[in-house]
Length: 258
Image 1 (cartoon, rainbow, N blue to C red):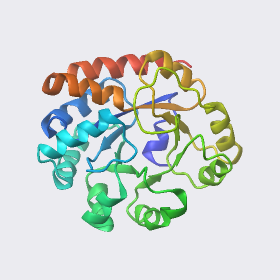
Image 2: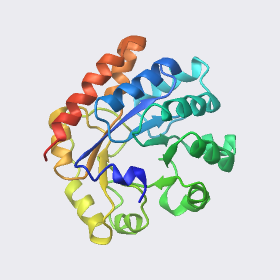
Image 3: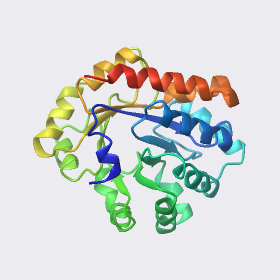
Image 4: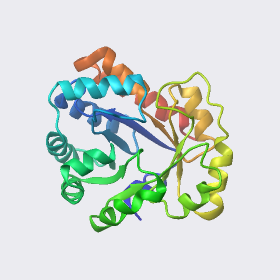
């Protein structure tokens, strides 16, 4: 069993996301360590891309800031290797297919493994096209994490059968971003997945408050939050570490004992 999947064994998992290099990699490194200290069970590291089609305006702006500051995939891999030596929380890269293609997919995955990455999420790669990546991921011991959306319907069972680490349940149609209400039938999505697999299901897209986290955790095995954290970093910049720590701590506390 992978370390990422084991992270779900201690109860509901909280999975925060950060855009690497926003506002700079030194701040990212401190934030990731503080998220681990605050109780994060798995941490998603976003590799900036110039056309992040799944992202809303908050994370798009973070991508622009990071790329404008000169962040590169090599620099992020170097940072990740440093972090891996200091924390024990499983780390996952979230990025886009073109980032891997331009770097060289096998070269990227080898370096990611060596840097201590346990999984990758590529939101622009549909299940039917994962064969371009999943076998190489397996070769380097990296889980290829699949996503399902409210529109997946009959495809959910098919995707869940082959899912690795956890199933990423997209709570809302459209791009990432905070929402006042989540109206998708999350319980239906997770029930379809559980019919064919015991893979943990974590819900992301749109969650920003402790109340929403509790609601989604009651229907799933974990909660993923990105935009709310990235917004804090955009607001506080190099002074955002303590604000992110408190936020992650409050969200983890909200889903305990559910």
